[in-house]
Structures are given as C-alpha cells and as structure tokens.
Image (tube, rainbow, N blue to C red; front, side, top):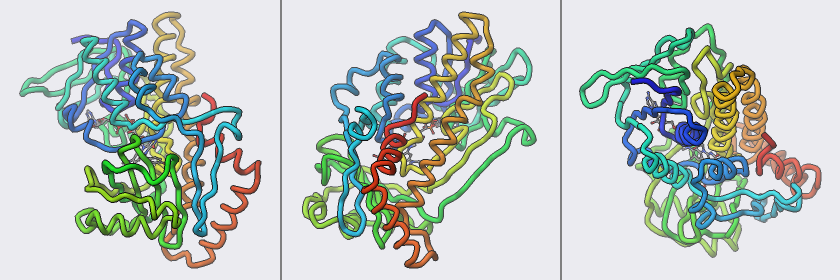
Length: 391
Ligand code: RFL
Ligand code: PHB
C-alpha cells in the first residue's frame, strides 16, 4: 500500500490532520490502536478556542458544533467563598470560547472521514512500527486481522498521544524531554443534570480545587482535586457530590443537582514537552509531543494549532515544492506550546492545594486571585491566554 502521509492515531490531532490533507487533495491513511467506539468513550476536553473552531470549519465539519455548541463569554473564579467573573469579550476585544466536547469533535471528524471513504485501520493494537523516517522513503508496518501490512509514504505524522509509539521510536539522543508531575489528580464525573451555572466555575478552596463545567444545558462535567493515591472505585457518586458541594459558594451549592454518573475517572496532571517535534520525515503533533495540566483547557487546542502548522507545511511541500513550512514546523509549534505550558502551569499552581505547603500558600494564592480579579491588566492577561493566543 502507498499513501502520501501515514497518520498514527485517530484522536483529534490525527483526524483533523487527515481531514485537512484530504481537503487539499493529499492522500492519507490513519492507523489507530483502539476501536472507534473506544476512542469515543474517552471523556476529555470541553473547551475550544477560536483556532480549533476555525479548523473545524476548514475541515467542513462545523455545522453541528455551531448548532449544539455553547458560546461562552466568560468564566467565574471562586475563592474565599465568593465568585468573580472574568469577561472575555470586554477584556480581549470581543473574543469568546466554544464549549463542545472532544467526544463530539471526534465523532464529527470520524463521520466526515468515513463519508469521504478515507482509509482508517482501527484496532491495530500495539503492532505499529515506524521505519526509515531519517531517510527519504519512510514506511509504517502493522498487523490487522492476523495479517502483516506495510504502508510506504512520504511523511509520517505521529498523532498517537502521550503513550504512543511515534515519540518512542525516536533515538533517545535525538530528543530532549521536559517534565513536571503534579502531586494530585482530577476526579471527574459526567452526569445528565443541568449545570450549576451557565458559565464554568474554577474554585480555589482550602479543601482543594474544583471545576464546574458542562457539555450541554442538560449535561454537566464536574471535577474535584484528589490525592494521587485515591482510587476511583472508592468514590461513590454521593461522596463526589458531597465533596464538590463543600467546595462551592452557597448559591452554586443550592443549585447543584445530583444525578447518576455516566462516567467517573481520575486523571493525573502533568506538564511535558518533547523537543524538537520533527525528526527527518516524522512529525509529532498534539499529546504525542506535549502535555499540559487541564486547568487552562489547552491540550486539545494545542493539538489543533500543531495540526494547522503541520498541514500548511505539508500542503506547501506538494503545491509549491517548498520545504520552508515543514522546516519551520517544530519551532513555530513549540513557540505556541511553551506559552500554553506556562499558562497552564501558572493557572494550576494558582488554583490547587499543594500538599505540605501549609497555610501561607493558601493566603498567597488568595492575594494573587484578589489582585487578578481587581486589576484590569491581570484580568486581561488571564482572558487573552484563556481564549487563546494568536497562531
Ligand atoms: P489523543 O486524544 O490521546 O489521541 C491519540 C490517539 O492515538 C492512539 N494511539 C495509537 N494508535 C496507533 N498505534 C499506537 N501505538 C498508538 N498509541 C496510541 C490512541 O488510542 C488515541 O486514539 O491525542 P491527540 O489527538 O493529540 O489529542 C489531544 C487531546 O486528547 C488532549 O490534549 C485533551 O483531551 C486535553 N484536555 C483538554 N484540552 C483542551 O483543549 N480543553 C479542555 O477543556 C481539556 N480538558 C483534557 C481535558 C484532558 C483530560 N484528560 C483526561 C487527560 C480534561 C481532561 C480530564
Ligand atoms: C471539561 O469540560 O472537561 C473541562 C473544561 C475546562 C477545563 C478542563 C476540562 O479547564
């Protein structure tokens, strides 16, 4: 089999890239470890920046998002028992974000891919191997339904997430990794109950962080900070709602509706960057190259900006016979990645309780939050990062 671009991973990065290349007439094949249903069952991101919204439009898959997605004009910061609003359009010259789940983004992209009849191999397990990306004729081999398969290609796009095979295939001395693991996780719960409030609430409390998010006016997504040693089986729905409720202000607490969990899981928090993002004819994009803690809602959005830079570079290669875009890919992407890493680390540090740090840490966070909501300069900085820095 031959294709122009072999894409490893059918998460948002791989599916977005596949669609953009297809629109430009560039052939591509996607290989995915899991089944499509498994990929759709993972509950992850909820907030899209304009960059991601624009890409969905460019891919021709934005109709349902514009119909069902919720445009949000601000967030609420809760500390010392009181909520304070950050007004995005007022602070950023009119910008907003879109609340539309990663599951729906993925579903829309998968539907468009299968409608266009583009080749996707699901359930290839751990069989994918990358070959010859340091030369001019790379290859990908894998096993499907008991048969060994081979794809010859011009480029390989490693869109296979943090645990994928692409980054792991790069010689250790060619890559530099930067990492910080946080001493807590997020316990998340999804339920068909109306959200406590029509905007997201980020809460700093003496008991730890909490987040009230949503997927629709009838579906809520809530998170509470928990110790890394906690097990999800030990958290009943009631225990979760009790803890969330303790971390809310009286009005939100009053409005909290409890309902059975559709999903409940614990996610660890990590900051991670691998440099560079290009190795010969292998390009890494999305979580394969970098991870942010979810507090800034940046992970999926960084995947979108990587894919935009990468698809522009690949299209330029074929249309204009120029390697400039591909040569600059890693530097361009990393510049944006590091700014989002900084923002996500800062917002995480401001909002969470760090074990062993004592009461002075809480007081310092509260002073910074007080400054943040009362200083136009500080509020603007938060708002401009949250809605997304320019490409
Ligand atoms: P993904 O989504 O991990 O997809 C990678 C795909 O590659 C497959 N794969 C392989 N395929 C073939 N062979 C192999 N050897 C393979 N190994 C792996 C995997 O099965 C998978 O299908 O990476 P991608 O596409 O780069 O997308 C990144 C996003 O998923 C991620 O950054 C976001 O979910 C992060 N994130 C958020 N991002 C936002 O922009 N806004 C948010 O509000 C937001 N909230 C979140 C989040 C992540 C969370 N968790 C659970 C980590 C909230 C949470 C709780
Ligand atoms: C979510 O809805 O899952 C979500 C929203 C905002 C975040 C993180 C996760 O910062």
